[in-house]
Image (tube, rainbow, N blue to C red; front, side):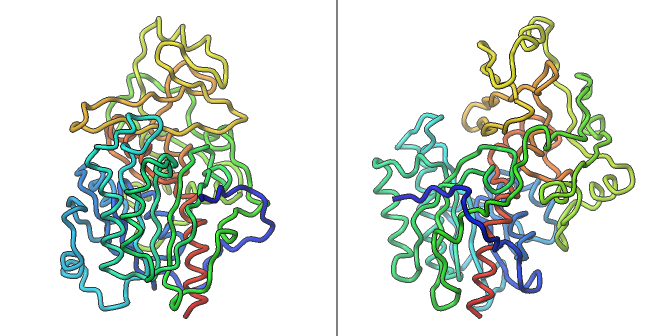
Length: 394
């Protein structure tokens, strides 16, 4: 049975307690790097990222220039390939994290049990069993917990049962950990009991004093008026501000882990207060009039776009599909006050990414990368709990 993690805990265990950079993790199915950024901010060193999508790999490489990147189908990845690339000694790898493709398990999508990508969930655990890291953390959609996916789960867990202490699947909503989105995912966590302090599901219940970040908080300081003619990458660089001093606000501009970040983006944000991704979308007059009538929290009947509520949270931003699946563009939320869909930079903030984080120069790939990512705000807090336990087991 899955544990639904909710906000009712009174203690906070999210602060890392050992020097940064001393524990190495591999990010499988890394995408743009939401889990990677969370891991790096929690004090881990992301030594390797694996993704078959060249656009996602390019984005990850831009933000993690010191990380080894492998563009490969994870189903073909072996421990020998990893060791040859990384040169890791036995026991040097602290963890393997990743979000195997979820389309075949999603309740929103086709929920196709024959989707060949479903087997990649099993491959994640196969690689864990071969590499024998001290812990693993896998993320997926709650649909994977359905009874008709039990055989896939059983096969996956068979690779790690006995060697790892497996916690029950944990269903976590990002907003409960201080992200401005209701994106809800299930996390599978296991650890080698002889190398880590004991952890239980209760350790992952978010503290009750975590600040609640709304759409208003997330978008404050970004330009609301977006010229639809801003279509090129350079035109998308606009002046942005950060308001507040809480956990979320401090991470919009700061908390840059050593060796992480695109130098040009970091410099432009520091010197000019400019961030990329403020790209416009051209709507016809009819569409704009229709959007103007949509109330906060309601959907446009034609496009199905949801108008964001300033005092609420952003629903899950969908990723759309790649060229191999028909290049379908996902429905984008409507800005809470403007008659347009949100920009990539607005989507990034709503997902919890900092203003210095770079995505694809195109809107389509940007939204795919953002919608596929774990919120780095959530990832940092969860992985900091794990890292504390790792330190306690030394």
